[in-house]
Length: 113
View 1: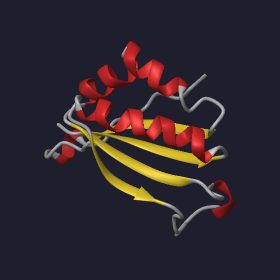
View 2: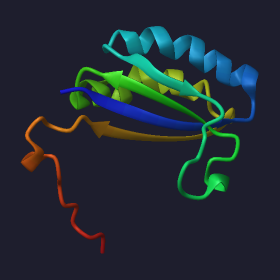
View 3: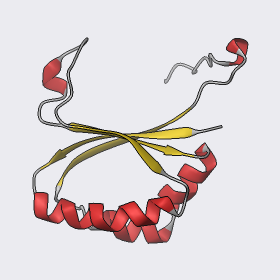
């Protein structure tokens, strides 16, 4: 089942961030990743627009959550990720596609204590 990385980024050093982009694209493709969305700016339809500021959004699809985790946790990606250190503010979340069976599409997350 496909899984997606949602990446919210505010770039403060474009040259340094571009080094990261050049290195990560071919590497992520080895894990079956492809970009679905690259958008800057985004249009905030609900919520506080200041939460987005000058961030852009990237959505990257992987064949599975396990493949995305394998990519994310790899030592080679850690080296590539270091290229963007100090180049901006990055937030990344991993989400799986909903199953076809609607009864299995809602998971209750325990309350954090």
